[in-house]
Image 1 (cartoon, helix red, strand yellow):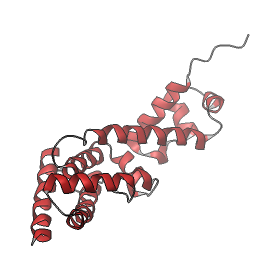
Image 2 (spheres, helix red, strand yellow; image 1 turned 90 degrees about the vertical axis):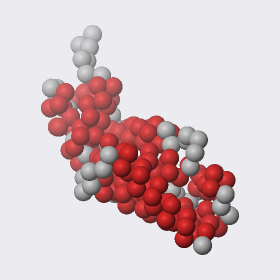
Image 3 (spheres, rainbow, N blue to C red; image 1 turned 180 degrees about the vertical axis):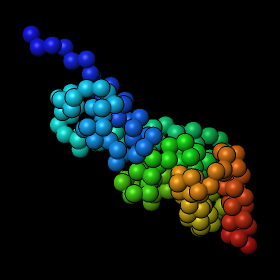
Image 4 (cartoon, one colour; image 1 turned 135 degrees about the vertical axis):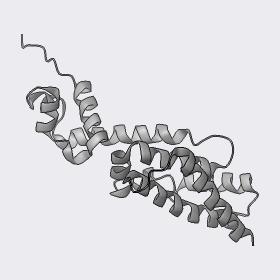
Length: 184
């Protein structure tokens, strides 16, 4: 009977994900993961067909974490501000995951301001919440999404050290200015 492996698939995923979160995907390779787990590379390749397989699993885990972070943006109130706050908070708390998902262009389908079904739902909710016409809601949405993404990128690359409260205040202030312009 072969000896029981002491390294599990979950251990590999968890340690690799920690490395991904703290240093970025570029540091995740078979040798670095094996070293972090104090083992050879053999367990990695017994659970994953190759490094791309492991990295795909890490990307799925990152997407799940982002979706969980964004789900707090589905609160009553202004939907665009709430999603913007959740998006910038994720960028601040998980800069390597944010950069991998949204700065390096890995998956546009995940982007909360993408032009798809979620966009239409958000536009409808925004129009209702702020008593806007569909055209006004789209103008607010477009300008706000650019501002929010820019703020999130600044926060992720640590060029701006705003607290979540400061980011929320900046998002609300920007929205007020945009609303004045589109209602004029």
